[in-house]
Length: 323
Image (cartoon, rainbow, N blue to C red; front, side, top):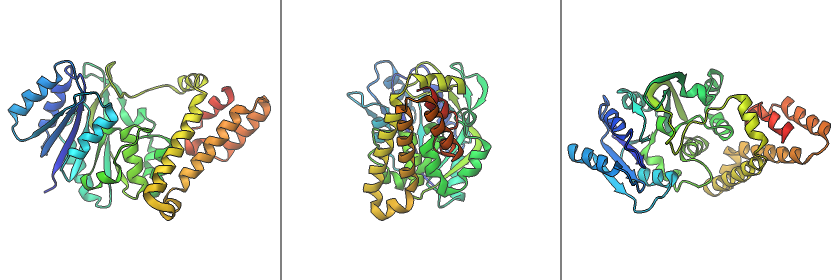
């Protein structure tokens, strides 16, 4: 029998935590343990956790941080404390459908070579009312991209371009947690987990059924940033330094994989990382080009080679024109 751990991180979560915990406890495949790491809350969150722990003795293991670690290190702490064959990440403010655990467990059992699985979700507002959109649509995980994701060797490249794997949708094999720890500070933890697993050969399975309600509200530490393409462009006008930051991030990723995989392993698995670095450098060079028509010529050349679509999105070219 597959054992299941839930890694739940909390911080000032009194508004929605009880509803989240109730949905986890109502699973048709109930978890074997729920590891809760509270990040120095100063509202009534700890009291809620203690109340549930007393009501379900032996199910909860709780850690109360004396100082705030931040969400990345707090999730790392929770993951490393989990003992289950499969580890599910959980936010404090969502609502799981009762078949979430069972469906993802089945998917992992059907795909023995997979390192992780993740699902779609229904987007809801603060009151839990649907807003008429799904998570995958909002993060750009289109049917075409889902088809590409089935080609396991392309997953690392796709994830380096954009994260499609939201932590609240994710479960992964517990014995792999050592491959991704410690979580680096240069990338959000859910993005890192998916990228690191896929790049090291532990591919992901995308489960199309929406298995939980993903709540959008003002108090989120990590929320879904939904921008229209036009807003993305306007946002880009004011973020010239983001090009340099992106290059630094990719260089950090390359350094991590070189040290982990070795020279031969890196050469075999991470050619797309070096290609992404070259792409980032080209964008920096475009930004330094002050002659407008020369800049546009470079941009068009990159577009025709498919570099924008491969490494970010074609909308990125407008940022390069204007910044």
